[in-house]
Length: 314
Ligand code: NAP
Ligand code: GLV
Image (spheres, rainbow, N blue to C red):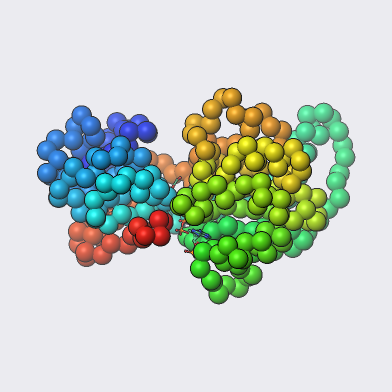
């Protein structure tokens, strides 16, 4: 029996608390802040944007679970105790992200928003056709999520290229590091961003990057899909790139500030598709089960999988 603290002030803590209680007969579930009890008991924490300083108040902590794949919300706490940080990785979560990426790549490739517009205006006007193999999708981030999405897009016969921090030997063209970025961008028609937010990637989706994208593809423009993190993008630059034509459209799941303020010009932009940070969303119960099975693994085998490299920041 372990004692688990739920520390997710930005979500609906009671819903999560109930889901944990219902599914974990073997554990004692505590809820921050009112039902945390004696902090000396806490062995595991399930956290999403925890208030800085709270985690260091738990002397018997064995591990911290990020309730998402990203961990920048934890690493931002300078007082974080030195215990393993585990991030959310799971085949179902990965598939959800691949659905999101594939849906948006296909929507742009099949001119979904143009035909929606034409339907609303009773216009019958077929556009010229092109093949998936004529379109290059540039995958920024070749980790768990990027690689899975890349594989799916390649099954549709899209030409996929990738970019990561370290060199890769894959069955498609890849680039790495700052030196490899310009060549990666120059051939990319649809830029998919599945990077983590780190000091090196913050603001990487900026005007200079958008201007380097290919505009010679069959769709006549470049398209951005960002499901990584909002602070990877400079939103004013996205708007500028859309108005000057260096971007022909964008699908955005994540934003510099969430919820996206109602004053943001992105909301009403005809070339922007917005979702409220749900690209790889799963039901609460599914996420609870993932955490519980990881705790079970640690308790029975001592093996900690999906541990974050703090130095790298992801
Ligand atoms: P991951 O397995 O850790 O992969 C990260 C990838 O990014 C790696 O390929 C890494 O390169 C690359 N990378 C990191 N820093 C880089 C840099 N400075 N330059 C170039 N490449 C860099 O992460 P993941 O599981 O695929 O998840 C990626 C991100 O998606 C998460 O961090 C999270 O922010 C976001 N996410 C969003 C949602 C959502 O619902 N919107 C859901 C889940 C995750 P190397 O391979 O060389 O290390
Ligand atoms: C969601 O954004 C995640 O990091 O899993």
